[in-house]
Image 1 (cartoon, rainbow, N blue to C red):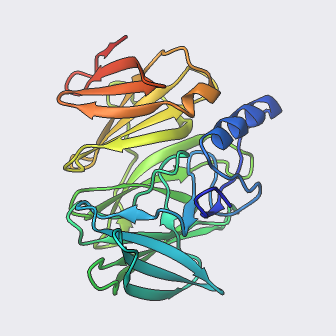
Image 2: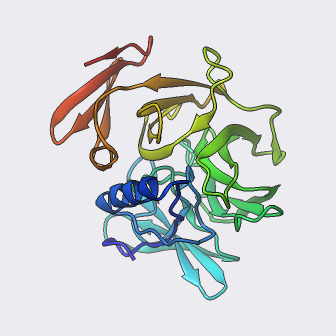
Length: 292
């Protein structure tokens, strides 16, 4: 259990023992608890969280948390001031609030406040199934249930919650860090054809560990800093309304331990990567040019 009291489902990853040790140290430095062999997370997907900070509404007034309740889950809407439970819903199965980076960044709540997604991660087996429940945040009533064949991790929602972005994990049992970014139509529960790739480098394989995440105020962009064993860190810029993405290399000279402390900050027209109060790099969010 981490210092915030979050029960976690996270799997340590890496093909080589040295890589495993480095990433585990980095994640511990970020405050994440690693439960090796758990079904809740694998490599590029941090899994889900129970209890803890959950995910907060855009206006900052309501916090949504998932609590274990025997073989089920109690999803609660709690006021951020006073901690009063306003609504709750019991779900059969272990559905947690999805994490999007190993610094405890959480997701699952649409910008317009009309959809809340909770996630029951797959077990990592070849015939695994990943399950999602879409709730109405105002009532916590179930809007839909989505089941996918395979190992998927939640990544982001479009501002209106109509499109869910997922990481389709590959070689989970082998500790692989490779994945495809997929888009799902929330209304139909079906995946859109093909993967979302950087059109400038369509043949480049997606690989890495998400360290931290920041999104634009309107939720049309999600920026994630990734660590990867080869090639150095990069920022994945996901355009959630256009179903497109861009990968931006950021040669900032930080090792995995330092990367666990790097945070990102959005300013008008730019994304800053900062470590202990110092700006390491600035990315132009229109051209994706990197300045040091």
